[in-house]
Image (cartoon, rainbow, N blue to C red; front, side, top):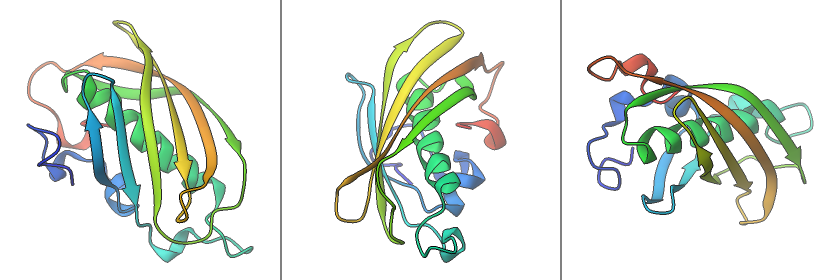
Amino acid sequence: MGAAIVPGFSADQAPATARWLGMDVVSWDREAATLRVSFDPPRDVINFGGVIQGGFLVAMMDDAMGFNAFISMDMKNAQASIDIHTHFFRPVAYGRTEVEARIVRAGRNVAFVEAELFDKDGILAARAVSSTKLTPFGGDIPKETASG
């Protein structure tokens, strides 16, 4: 997961949710603090309407925003979402999705981030804005909290 694109990161540091949802790094722009990831989720995410349940779409955007803050801020902080506000524009059929996440502004304790989720046809389907609490690591990166 993104080892070649994100130097110093290995897939075993990714949170379990990101691995379960099939997250993979598509591109990362360190200067712009922008990350694009894809998700190939398991079929368990489909709701009664035959589309991906909205909570899983939020989870995808949350994982992308947190991971972007983690790598773009030099892998020095754990992130914990303070809030997430989401707009859903259209249902998302089961299949590969992509999320583009960016840091809007970051301080020492809080980062403001946003994400856009695109369906398998590349159409904007959801948008989220979030604030995330930054907690500096006190040593090596704990694998279970590296980017979540």
